[in-house]
Image 1 (cartoon, rainbow, N blue to C red):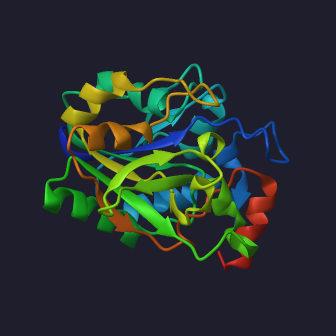
Image 2 (cartoon, rainbow, N blue to C red):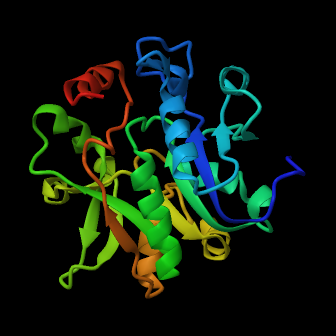
Length: 255
């Protein structure tokens, strides 16, 4: 644990424990795959630094933790997630260190290199100024063709008849009707920390992948009468990389 970690209004947590088994270089942790001459995650970390939303980034690492630490250096706080049991489980790994230190927690992903400093700051500012319990990014696309095929794998945003967000359904758990929804979830979140720690334990793994999804907190919030604050993000900025073919998509859109 980092005893020097200061109390902070907002702490950014970057999830970086993925194996990268669907990348061509499976020996390398996914976030260290090279993109434009540097590890994929470094693009995101540079954007966070430019956004100036927190003093020090916390990175959740997995079984190849030493490789990630060696590549990124000592300017970050690292938390190890020994087993990869889902995004909710990864964030839970930070609880003991952050519970008395952070008032709000922003969760981002090391395999999303296109996110800009301006958008990171916009999400953080919206969250803090609105005093929201939960702030989330959403992406709207016209269809899932061409470079937008990436978004076909994203969770769909579920809205009720009043247009309020009531949950997120992952692709593998979605019905054929839900798969037609073109508003998707890039998984950029800000939470009031107190609410986050109180509700993480409510996550279950009763889904196709048997993982604890952080995204299920949106449905939990809705049932509690909490309306998430939504921030629309440019589709190009929310592009993620899960397989080597998606690196080629980034070059298509000029990244």
